[in-house]
Image (cartoon, rainbow, N blue to C red; front, side, top):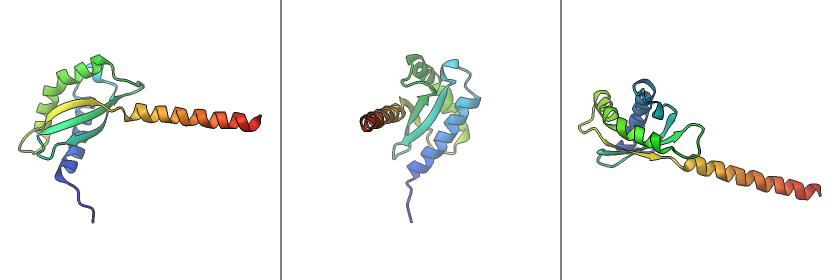
Length: 122
């Protein structure tokens, strides 16, 4: 049977709650187009790295990160109300670059296929 660490279970719960807080409680337009893609908790559950992407963008606007950091205290307070943890984790917001990287790889693969098709047609 596969064993999950408590940090992984808490990370999943934090991800759901932060996504809900961003959707329903934060009114800042700078963070309105965000999707939380992952949360990485430290083993002692005191720090949470929140990974996010901005919908329709390859890179994060500086205003978006600024808006998230400004709302960080409010988000932490809301998490404290919703989660039954001894310590509410400190939140560190990071842009998730895996989507942009994956998109770039897809484009390269498409170009290779197109070049192969052009060569076989000739």
